[in-house]
Length: 175
Image (cartoon, rainbow, N blue to C red; front, side, top):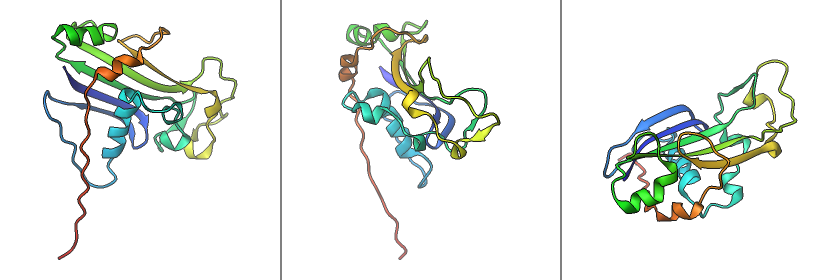
């Protein structure tokens, strides 16, 4: 089983970003300030069961800075697709997250307005930098599969994943 796709919406430096990954080792490289750390942090929001409630609860600066608030309050969405589910153990872990494809599962993190949000939207479109989001009326959820569900999510299953990050910082100097 491997991480095959990550889709990030409205999170930090990502407006609507989708990346496909291949089976095996994936290496993330790029210039400074392009979102490498934000990408890894988005994976932590989904997979890191040791994150405190405070870490999973986002702040206004965690929303993409180019957002325009119009007819609904914005949400952050991070969708992870797992493919190559073949063994009985892998199936046992992902069984509630499967899609129509029996070798594919999805996990989704959302930071969104609660269904009974009382905060009023601005009368005119506004940039996210011009208003204060009513974050006290937001919640985060994680669910598996293709359809959002209210079933309790089993965070213990996340402990079955062996995701490792190796971070290296290289600074260049002029010779």
